[in-house]
Image (cartoon, rainbow, N blue to C red; front, side, top):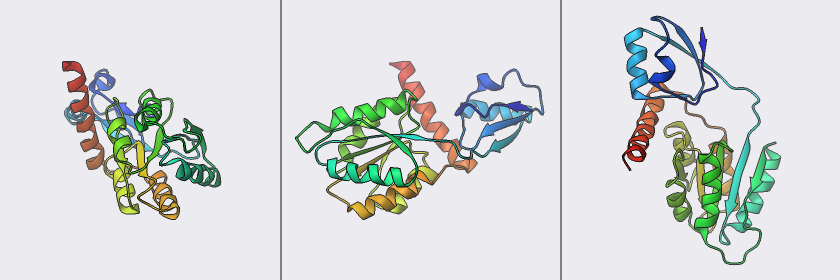
Length: 207
């Protein structure tokens, strides 16, 4: 068996050397690119997925002045859940520019220094726009639990944006808990996210 469970994205380059019928072990939420899928089919490679247990996650978080109070409540929640976080600020309610703080979290996720990020501004929209400008970031704004679950289960969102003026602290807690505890596992969803990644790669390559 070929163990590729440390890789989050499987490309055709990872599979070219494998003989027909080889068994491959992948991470539970590893994404397979379209060309890699073609190679798997052509060579009849057999896939199994390894479930991850007990892996500690450090969550990158930030907020502008409109999301500061909710960010402080988020920090308490993350501690209660036994999760570590890195707070990029802001650290009070003085007016700041949300793009600066959204960028810091999104960049941390883009550079793979953090697996997940949570950003809070007044509405959640602006930070989502900023985060999605960075390669490898799939940011989703959620105003309820259903959207939070869908963004992870269907789209493998790695950044969550929230509106500090749009939802209550209690709503934020429920949204975050569901978002953190939901994973993308079904092949059909993983294949669709692979297409998102492929589109992004083509755009970057053509610039």
